[in-house]
Image (cartoon, rainbow, N blue to C red):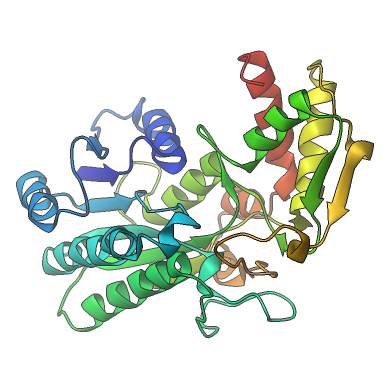
Length: 320
């Protein structure tokens, strides 16, 4: 089998390299995996993207590439839509035409954040900014391609939130600021679930592949993929700083010096959803139907369980 992973230099792309390496290391019949980043394939270039797909002929396409500069998207809408909507459409069309499996990643930003409680997969999309609109369009085009093509292919769109991993992210920014400042002011009225890129890659492959790295059959559609529980940016900042202190890192800021503020006190070019909580019941039902308790246990992992070792590893590697 051939697996093509886009976005190899991003947090999720790096997580897939690690996870696929672990899963295939002991297999006698290993899949052929190609990882591509922007230098190997500019996904905004339709001709180059199409040529790569036709040349490599993958049975599994994992699109971990994305335009994620939320504020810059307000002035770079053409690029945001090219990467987040048109490129996934081309990948989906290839997968549908060639009976392949397509994994794609979307975001809580497709919602306006005004719902009380947890969002479901079929809740109305109503994005606030260009970034969210480009990701919502990507979702719609993927579904439309598969619906309009007679195909044995399948797709999963994983909606997630607040991703962190090997790269720049909120946690690393907070820890950098905590070394520089004695006090921080962090938003405390936006709610969501911080999601480890490693965790997300593992959950994704749990759906797509069996223990022999063969493709599973699953129902195509959108799946919310976030750890259990919820917090705010303020809550995440406090936990990250405390975890760094517990790991022996010297900081100027302590959790008690992280002041909660309202989102209106920290205006940004692009609006953010106030509520990013998403139900994962749909994915639970799939894993429960397979009777795989280990996959259910991983899906039920509390959001904070992965944050502490993540920060400890940053400290160990001298990255704080």
